[in-house]
Length: 354
Ligand SMILES: *Cc1c(COP(=O)(O)O)cnc(C)c1O
Image 1 (spheres, protein in one colour):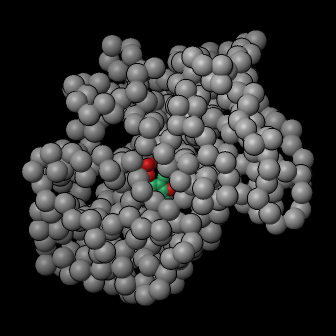
Image 2 (cartoon, helix red, strand yellow; image 1 turned 30 degrees about the horizontal axis):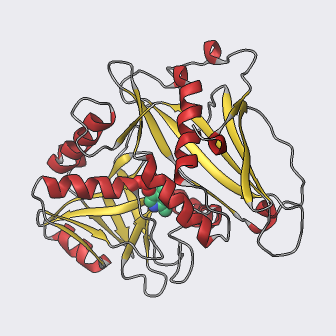
């Protein structure tokens, strides 16, 4: 390891592991014994440290709190049947981390520092990676601005941190989705393609209103016309129409998901036709009505594939075929899990072994 990547380690005096109920691990609530923190100051990254997980002290004037100069990533570690641990495609997250950093006017982090930080933290807390079927360790890298200055300007100092959470199996209830025609998640020229905190803050209110009406998720449409599909909640929207995999092409309003890319790659390898293009809401609704749309789902790290049972648009409900019987969704879930849990040969080098 180069000096630049030397990560100082201070171990927790006592592990919290014996107190953790591994039968009950809701997403994002249980944190491991350690966390990683690095500092950007004077134009350089320095002082990467792994320390006991706990509260941190910061000025109340930091610009991350006032102007939202902050963003995050999300990926997972998996325990294989033979006990080995891998992280799924961290190189993709490292690249996207820097795409977000540039858009938010924040410093980039060399990809090997991003990956090494994750690898070392997961290794130190490797006993926290659950072994139960379907369980994972969620990894949350993030960066935030720390200048104690109330002017609206890019900060000159930042923290990079990584937290890890053991997480139970995701029970993907089939979703009742509202096609959103009033609110917008992101607009052209904005920063929807960055995993910036503000995108998620802005989606809470429309999400709450949809939830009050009984919907599980929002299908976002374009800000200008609300006629084109963009994303499904915080996941990429994908459809199977006439046997083809159809998904909105990535653009500045859409986040370029690792799950989306993995699904496209596998579908193509099976000889399936894939269309990445603008997808009209009218086309999807018509395809549901005439029975040619056999699958609609959100693709993301949290749920992998979250299937849609029904969609609501301007007063009308459109019902999809029973997702539990979907050949495509079930085959794709299994194919991805087989790779992530090391049950098949990893021919694409997607598993980063810890
Ligand atoms: C994180 C995220 C996704 C999914 O990306 P993955 O890399 O597959 O987890 C899709 N859309 C939005 C808005 C997201 O925040």
